[in-house]
Amino acid sequence: MENKNIPVHVSIIMDGNGRWAKARGKDRVYGHFEGVESVRACTEAAVEDGVKYLSLYAFSEENWNRPADEVATLMKLMMKSIRDEVSTLMDNGVRFVVLGNRERLGEELCKAIDELMEMTAHNSRMTLIVFLSYSGKWDIMQAMKKAAAELSPEEFQAMKAEDFDRYLVTAGIPDPDLLIRTSGEERISNYLLWQSAYTEFVFSDVLWPDFRKPQFREALAEYARRDRRYGKVK
Image (cartoon, rainbow, N blue to C red; front, side, top):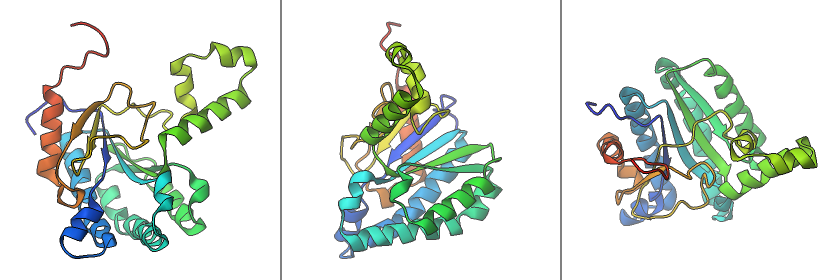
């Protein structure tokens, strides 16, 4: 890619799997399976273009309210994806990280996640972060509780925004420079509420199963045209 203004951290809200499947007369879960191909394509593009962090909103805390059979299929799909992508992640030097409320995940899935995270821990070309059973409000709440338990009342009162960052599940990970949401929806759906304070947003009408390398690179090009001022005057 010729553009040199590459964001360090790109995050994607992967939306539209169900609608994509419905338009083809299929069950919603069919769209989730096809969406895995988009994950693979965007991960490859991110590595090729020099993105250092790619994060994906795979399953929100609110998604637990979906039909039980769909949730079960999504968890099985996550297990299959972890097993299938081991060699690809290793070959491309990608570190794999899962962030979210692990208490709600099954023991088998947690074990598979831990094994892949350990296996890829020393990969340094790019970090792929999957947000699973995550919500921005939950993240802020758990961070506040950790800070309150660790700090004295005086320290808690004196805490600055940059101090609070280390209690979030994303501690040590740069805030996203670019957030992409597919399927035409224009909201962030309780995702990275703290971390996206100065993130650039790109909303795409393309449904997630159709969002591949060309669309990913179009979003990067749009980002490159932005003038990020962070509240300042240039």
